[in-house]
Length: 241
Image (cartoon, rainbow, N blue to C red; front, side, top):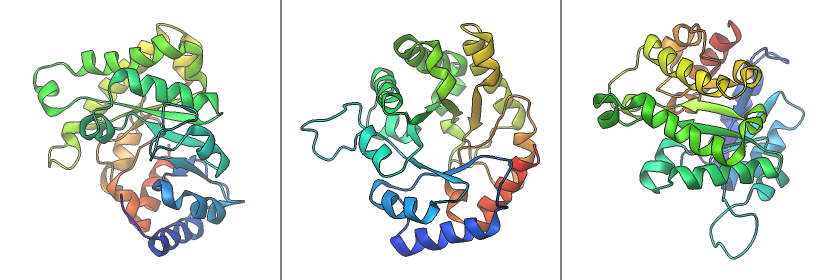
Protein backbone atom coordinates (compact mmCIF):
# COMPACT_ATOMS: atom_id res chain seq x y z
CA UNK A 1 0.00 0.00 0.00
CA UNK A 2 2.50 2.53 -1.31
CA UNK A 3 2.47 5.33 -3.85
CA UNK A 4 0.34 8.16 -5.18
CA UNK A 5 -0.79 8.80 -8.74
CA UNK A 6 2.19 11.08 -9.29
CA UNK A 7 4.71 8.76 -7.63
CA UNK A 8 3.48 5.77 -9.61
CA UNK A 9 3.63 7.71 -12.87
CA UNK A 10 7.19 8.81 -12.12
CA UNK A 11 8.24 5.28 -11.18
CA UNK A 12 6.78 3.69 -14.30
CA UNK A 13 8.22 6.44 -16.51
CA UNK A 14 11.67 5.77 -15.04
CA UNK A 15 11.29 2.05 -15.75
CA UNK A 16 10.19 2.68 -19.32
CA UNK A 17 13.20 4.92 -19.89
CA UNK A 18 15.65 2.64 -18.11
CA UNK A 19 14.75 -0.69 -19.68
CA UNK A 20 15.76 -1.82 -23.16
CA UNK A 21 12.88 -1.81 -25.70
CA UNK A 22 12.69 -5.62 -25.65
CA UNK A 23 14.15 -6.85 -22.36
CA UNK A 24 15.21 -10.49 -22.15
CA UNK A 25 13.62 -10.90 -18.73
CA UNK A 26 9.85 -10.59 -18.42
CA UNK A 27 8.93 -7.68 -16.16
CA UNK A 28 5.61 -6.88 -14.48
CA UNK A 29 4.43 -4.28 -11.98
CA UNK A 30 1.58 -4.77 -9.51
CA UNK A 31 0.17 -1.46 -8.22
CA UNK A 32 -2.66 -1.26 -5.73
CA UNK A 33 -6.19 -1.60 -7.17
CA UNK A 34 -7.10 2.07 -7.42
CA UNK A 35 -4.12 2.87 -9.65
CA UNK A 36 -4.34 -0.11 -12.01
CA UNK A 37 -6.24 1.73 -14.75
CA UNK A 38 -3.78 4.60 -14.92
CA UNK A 39 -0.82 2.22 -14.84
CA UNK A 40 -2.38 0.22 -17.68
CA UNK A 41 -2.68 3.34 -19.82
CA UNK A 42 0.93 4.29 -19.13
CA UNK A 43 2.22 0.78 -19.90
CA UNK A 44 0.26 0.44 -23.14
CA UNK A 45 2.51 -0.60 -26.05
CA UNK A 46 5.37 -1.25 -23.62
CA UNK A 47 7.12 -4.52 -22.73
CA UNK A 48 6.09 -4.26 -19.05
CA UNK A 49 3.09 -6.34 -18.00
CA UNK A 50 0.51 -5.30 -15.42
CA UNK A 51 -0.58 -7.32 -12.42
CA UNK A 52 -2.75 -6.92 -9.32
CA UNK A 53 -1.90 -7.68 -5.71
CA UNK A 54 -4.95 -9.81 -4.92
CA UNK A 55 -8.31 -10.93 -6.31
CA UNK A 56 -11.69 -12.08 -5.01
CA UNK A 57 -12.42 -15.80 -5.11
CA UNK A 58 -15.98 -15.04 -6.27
CA UNK A 59 -16.76 -14.11 -9.87
CA UNK A 60 -19.62 -11.63 -9.31
CA UNK A 61 -22.17 -10.63 -6.69
CA UNK A 62 -22.70 -8.79 -3.42
CA UNK A 63 -19.15 -8.79 -2.06
CA UNK A 64 -18.66 -5.15 -1.11
CA UNK A 65 -15.09 -3.94 -1.34
CA UNK A 66 -13.84 -6.90 -3.37
CA UNK A 67 -12.40 -6.90 -6.91
CA UNK A 68 -13.10 -9.77 -9.30
CA UNK A 69 -10.76 -11.39 -11.81
CA UNK A 70 -13.00 -10.18 -14.64
CA UNK A 71 -12.54 -6.59 -13.45
CA UNK A 72 -8.77 -7.01 -13.34
CA UNK A 73 -8.78 -8.44 -16.84
CA UNK A 74 -10.98 -5.60 -18.01
CA UNK A 75 -8.51 -2.92 -16.90
CA UNK A 76 -5.57 -4.66 -18.57
CA UNK A 77 -4.04 -7.00 -16.00
CA UNK A 78 -2.14 -10.07 -17.14
CA UNK A 79 -1.05 -11.29 -13.71
CA UNK A 80 -2.44 -11.39 -10.20
CA UNK A 81 -0.71 -12.31 -6.95
CA UNK A 82 -2.56 -14.88 -4.83
CA UNK A 83 -1.67 -16.06 -1.35
CA UNK A 84 0.86 -13.35 -0.56
CA UNK A 85 2.29 -13.86 2.93
CA UNK A 86 0.70 -10.64 4.16
CA UNK A 87 -2.72 -11.73 2.89
CA UNK A 88 -2.29 -15.08 4.64
CA UNK A 89 -1.02 -13.60 7.91
CA UNK A 90 -2.94 -10.32 8.25
CA UNK A 91 -6.20 -11.25 6.54
CA UNK A 92 -6.26 -14.92 7.51
CA UNK A 93 -6.49 -16.24 3.95
CA UNK A 94 -6.12 -20.00 4.31
CA UNK A 95 -4.88 -22.54 1.76
CA UNK A 96 -8.40 -23.34 0.57
CA UNK A 97 -9.25 -19.70 -0.12
CA UNK A 98 -5.95 -19.12 -1.91
CA UNK A 99 -6.67 -22.13 -4.12
CA UNK A 100 -10.08 -20.71 -5.00
CA UNK A 101 -8.52 -17.35 -5.85
CA UNK A 102 -6.04 -19.16 -8.08
CA UNK A 103 -8.92 -20.81 -9.96
CA UNK A 104 -10.88 -17.56 -10.20
CA UNK A 105 -7.88 -15.82 -11.77
CA UNK A 106 -7.31 -18.53 -14.34
CA UNK A 107 -11.00 -18.68 -15.23
CA UNK A 108 -10.63 -15.13 -16.58
CA UNK A 109 -7.36 -15.78 -18.40
CA UNK A 110 -5.13 -14.18 -15.77
CA UNK A 111 -1.85 -15.79 -14.78
CA UNK A 112 -1.77 -16.29 -11.00
CA UNK A 113 1.47 -15.74 -9.12
CA UNK A 114 1.02 -18.23 -6.27
CA UNK A 115 2.95 -17.29 -3.13
CA UNK A 116 4.09 -19.96 -0.69
CA UNK A 117 6.44 -19.78 2.27
CA UNK A 118 7.04 -20.39 5.94
CA UNK A 119 7.19 -18.20 9.04
CA UNK A 120 10.20 -17.90 11.35
CA UNK A 121 8.58 -20.28 13.85
CA UNK A 122 7.95 -22.84 11.12
CA UNK A 123 11.52 -22.49 9.82
CA UNK A 124 12.96 -22.99 13.32
CA UNK A 125 10.76 -26.08 13.78
CA UNK A 126 12.18 -27.51 10.52
CA UNK A 127 8.72 -27.39 8.94
CA UNK A 128 9.66 -25.42 5.82
CA UNK A 129 9.15 -28.19 3.27
CA UNK A 130 6.00 -29.41 5.01
CA UNK A 131 4.41 -25.93 4.94
CA UNK A 132 5.38 -25.21 1.35
CA UNK A 133 4.11 -28.61 0.21
CA UNK A 134 0.81 -28.08 2.01
CA UNK A 135 0.27 -24.67 0.43
CA UNK A 136 1.18 -25.95 -3.03
CA UNK A 137 -0.84 -29.16 -2.75
CA UNK A 138 -4.01 -27.22 -1.86
CA UNK A 139 -3.83 -25.57 -5.28
CA UNK A 140 -2.73 -28.67 -7.18
CA UNK A 141 -5.54 -30.76 -5.71
CA UNK A 142 -8.21 -28.18 -6.55
CA UNK A 143 -6.95 -26.89 -9.90
CA UNK A 144 -5.13 -29.94 -11.24
CA UNK A 145 -1.56 -30.18 -12.48
CA UNK A 146 -2.38 -28.78 -15.94
CA UNK A 147 -3.28 -25.45 -14.30
CA UNK A 148 0.42 -24.97 -13.54
CA UNK A 149 1.13 -24.53 -17.24
CA UNK A 150 -0.24 -21.00 -16.93
CA UNK A 151 0.93 -20.09 -13.44
CA UNK A 152 3.95 -18.77 -11.60
CA UNK A 153 5.04 -19.81 -8.10
CA UNK A 154 6.82 -17.40 -5.75
CA UNK A 155 8.65 -18.58 -2.64
CA UNK A 156 8.45 -16.10 0.22
CA UNK A 157 10.50 -16.99 3.30
CA UNK A 158 8.41 -14.80 5.61
CA UNK A 159 11.16 -14.89 8.24
CA UNK A 160 13.58 -13.16 5.83
CA UNK A 161 11.31 -10.24 4.87
CA UNK A 162 11.93 -7.04 6.82
CA UNK A 163 13.35 -8.90 9.82
CA UNK A 164 17.06 -8.36 9.36
CA UNK A 165 17.48 -12.10 8.83
CA UNK A 166 18.61 -13.13 5.37
CA UNK A 167 18.02 -16.35 3.49
CA UNK A 168 21.15 -17.45 1.67
CA UNK A 169 21.02 -18.24 -2.06
CA UNK A 170 21.58 -21.88 -1.11
CA UNK A 171 18.54 -21.83 1.22
CA UNK A 172 16.45 -20.30 -1.56
CA UNK A 173 17.66 -22.93 -4.01
CA UNK A 174 16.83 -25.75 -1.60
CA UNK A 175 13.18 -24.70 -1.32
CA UNK A 176 12.84 -23.84 -5.01
CA UNK A 177 14.15 -27.30 -5.93
CA UNK A 178 11.58 -28.81 -3.56
CA UNK A 179 8.75 -26.82 -5.15
CA UNK A 180 9.81 -27.89 -8.63
CA UNK A 181 10.13 -31.52 -7.52
CA UNK A 182 6.58 -31.45 -6.15
CA UNK A 183 5.27 -30.38 -9.55
CA UNK A 184 7.59 -32.67 -11.52
CA UNK A 185 6.25 -35.60 -9.51
CA UNK A 186 2.84 -34.93 -11.09
CA UNK A 187 4.05 -33.87 -14.55
CA UNK A 188 7.73 -33.68 -15.49
CA UNK A 189 7.28 -31.39 -18.49
CA UNK A 190 5.17 -28.86 -16.58
CA UNK A 191 7.49 -28.97 -13.58
CA UNK A 192 10.59 -28.37 -15.70
CA UNK A 193 9.05 -25.33 -17.38
CA UNK A 194 7.45 -23.84 -14.23
CA UNK A 195 8.75 -20.40 -13.29
CA UNK A 196 9.62 -20.21 -9.59
CA UNK A 197 10.38 -16.72 -8.29
CA UNK A 198 12.16 -15.78 -5.08
CA UNK A 199 10.48 -13.22 -2.82
CA UNK A 200 12.77 -12.86 0.18
CA UNK A 201 14.07 -9.28 0.24
CA UNK A 202 15.75 -9.29 -3.17
CA UNK A 203 17.92 -6.20 -3.63
CA UNK A 204 20.34 -4.94 -6.27
CA UNK A 205 23.21 -6.14 -4.09
CA UNK A 206 22.10 -9.78 -3.84
CA UNK A 207 19.99 -10.27 -6.98
CA UNK A 208 22.72 -11.59 -9.25
CA UNK A 209 23.83 -14.27 -6.78
CA UNK A 210 20.24 -15.33 -6.02
CA UNK A 211 19.26 -15.47 -9.70
CA UNK A 212 22.30 -17.63 -10.46
CA UNK A 213 20.73 -20.54 -8.55
CA UNK A 214 19.50 -23.24 -10.97
CA UNK A 215 15.91 -23.32 -9.75
CA UNK A 216 15.47 -19.57 -9.18
CA UNK A 217 13.81 -18.12 -12.27
CA UNK A 218 13.37 -14.54 -11.10
CA UNK A 219 12.13 -12.45 -8.21
CA UNK A 220 8.97 -11.16 -6.60
CA UNK A 221 10.31 -7.79 -5.52
CA UNK A 222 8.90 -5.87 -2.57
CA UNK A 223 10.41 -2.71 -1.11
CA UNK A 224 13.21 -2.52 -3.67
CA UNK A 225 10.64 -2.12 -6.46
CA UNK A 226 9.61 1.27 -5.06
CA UNK A 227 12.93 2.78 -6.17
CA UNK A 228 13.41 2.85 -9.92
CA UNK A 229 17.22 2.68 -9.83
CA UNK A 230 17.17 -0.30 -7.48
CA UNK A 231 14.51 -2.14 -9.46
CA UNK A 232 16.29 -1.52 -12.77
CA UNK A 233 19.49 -3.02 -11.34
CA UNK A 234 17.51 -6.10 -10.25
CA UNK A 235 16.02 -6.34 -13.75
CA UNK A 236 19.53 -6.13 -15.21
CA UNK A 237 20.63 -8.97 -12.93
CA UNK A 238 17.68 -11.05 -14.13
CA UNK A 239 18.54 -10.38 -17.76
CA UNK A 240 22.07 -11.62 -17.16
CA UNK A 241 20.64 -15.06 -16.37
